[in-house]
Image (cartoon, rainbow, N blue to C red):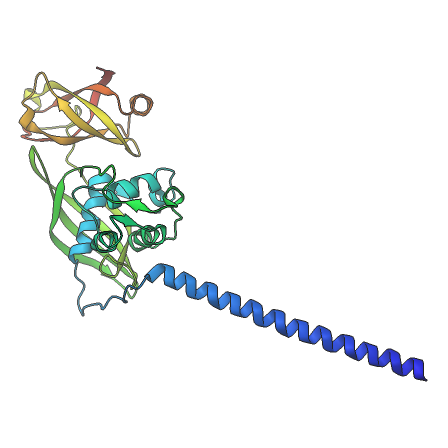
Length: 312
C-alpha cells in the first residue's frame, strides 16, 4: 500500500513539474515572439510617424522623386527587379549614393551621423520604396552617402497624372513623365502601380511597378521621313543597367553627329537582338561604337536600336 501511494505521489510530482516547465516555455516563446514582432515593426518604422493620407490621392515630392529616379533607370520595374541579383547594387547607387537625388529621410539621418546611414536605415528606405523586406548584405557597416556618389542618369518630373484605379490598398496611375538631359527634353507616358504603406518615407506609398514607353529611333520604323533615313554612330560605354536587353550607355562622342543631339546618357535597345545584347554584357564598361539608323526627324537622341556595336 505504501509503495503504491509513493508511486502515485511521484507521478503527481512529475506531472506538476511537466506542467510548470510547459508554462514557463510557453511564456518564454510568447515573449520572444512579441519581442521579434516589436523589432520588425521598429525596423520598418525607425521612428517614422505613420503617413497621414489626404482625402484625395496626390503624388508628393518624395514619391515623385522615387518614381522619376526609377523611371530614369528602368523602362520596366517590378518585383522581378527587386529580387534580381543586381538590385542591391543598383538601389544603393541610385537611391543612397546619387549626387543629384537622395530621399529626404536619408539626408536627414545621414547628416546626423557624418554622412553615414546605418544598415537598418538603408534597409528601411528599400522597404519604403518597394514594400518588400530585402537584406542589404553589402552594407553591414552602413552606407556613406557621399562616397563614390554616382551622377544621375538625368533629371525629370511628372508633368501630369490621373488616377486610373484606386482601392483601399492599391492605386494605379497614368502619368506623363518629362525627362531632361544635355540634349533637351523627352516626354513619355508611364503607368505606375502603388501600394499604401503608412510607414513608407515616400509619402506613404511603395512602388509595385513602373512601365514607361520611350521614343525609339528604329531602323525599321515606318516614318513618313523614311526617305531621309541616315546612318549615325556614337561612342559610349555601358553602365551595367541591363533592363531586359535595354542598356544605359554613357555618351562620350560622335564623329558624324552634333554632340548637342545627345544627352549624357543614351538608352540602347537590344531587347530583340540577343546576340548584340550578350556582346554588350561581355564588354560592359568598355568604349563601344554604336551604329544606328535615324529617320532625320528627331532633334534629340534618347533611345536607339543599333544596327551594329563594336569595340572602339
